[in-house]
Image (cartoon, rainbow, N blue to C red; front, top):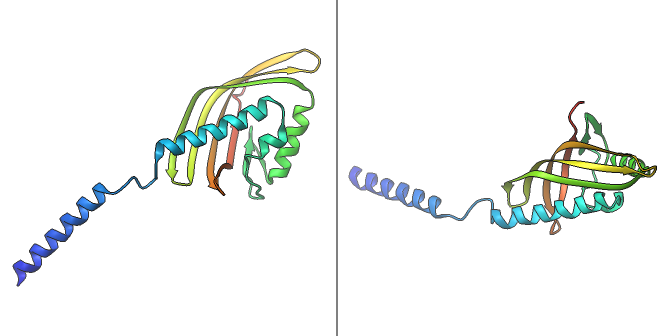
Length: 159
């Protein structure tokens, strides 16, 4: 009897290991998720380059849990961050933000982390311009079929 129990346990263990190894990717289709997150981020960046704060923030979930951090400042609400961006856009005539490096890590079928670095050039309404490198990390979540930012952290290096 003992031998039969051992054989059954070994067979069950082997079956479980094979089943787990052959199971589908637990994060879903990583390539499709990565592509969708990159596309949402691209549209978000286009809105920023167009100086359209409302369209830019359409990609950010409404939260009062400090979802945006910019250069060491935590914005408690999405509305507070939106107002700061709107005010900042007022003196800018043209914005060109570009990524040099972009990485997407799929965490689950509905959550992904985008980490990127790049640079931007802003031209003010008086003709002056300035440029700076930046880094960003964004946690995207899938909500109602759309990828939205749950948390964003933006920074520029200290001079």
